[in-house]
Length: 111
Length: 117
Image (tube, rainbow over all chains, first blue to last red; front, side):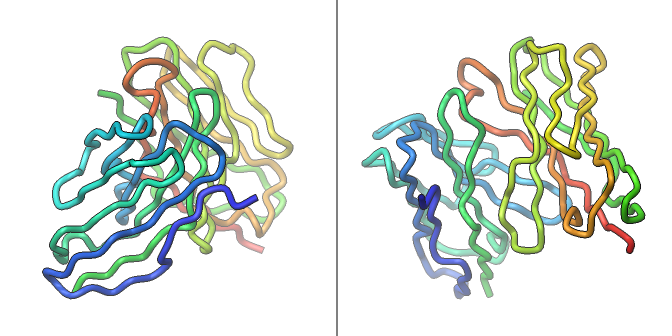
C-alpha cells in the first residue's frame, strides 16, 4: 500500500536550472496539492488540483508550474531555480471526506 | 481567507507528564475540519487527530485529545503521559468542508515539542 510516493528525497540545483518533482498516489483521490515548508512559516500551498485536467494556484505559485494529466500523477516543475526556492516540498492527496495524506517530502537546495 | 496561528514556537515537557499545544484560527465559515499533524525528524507528516466542526464532542485518540471551542475559534491538543516518541514538530491545520477551500489545508507555523527524560 504505497499511498503517496514523492521523488526525489533530496536534490541540489544550480541557480537557473530546471527540474521536476514527481508525485504519484494510488488511493484514487481527486484532490492533490503541493506545499513548501520553510522554518517558522508552516506549510504553504503552491498549487493544487481537484481532478485530472484541472489545476489552480495556491498561496505561493510564482516560479512553479503543474499539470495533471491523470488522477494518479501531479508533478511540480521548477522552471528556473532560484535560491529563494530552497525549501522542503510536500505533495499531498485527499478526497472530499478524508484527511490529506502526504509524501515523504523533498529537500531542495538551490545554490 | 482563513488563518491559523500557533503562538508557541517551542514547548517542552517531562516524560510521563501532560502538555497542551495551543492553536487558534480565523474563519467566517461554519462547516470545516481541523487537524493536528505530527512531523518527527524523519520529516513524514503524520495525522494525529481530526475534528469536524459540526461535532460538539471533542475528538480523542488514545493519549491525544483536543479541546475544541468553536465560538472562541480555539483548537488545542493535549498529550497525556508524554513519551519520548512524541518529540516532534506539531502543526495545526484547517480545511473547509465544502466549496473551493475543501481542497486546501491552511497550516499554523508549528510548535516544536521536546520531551525531557
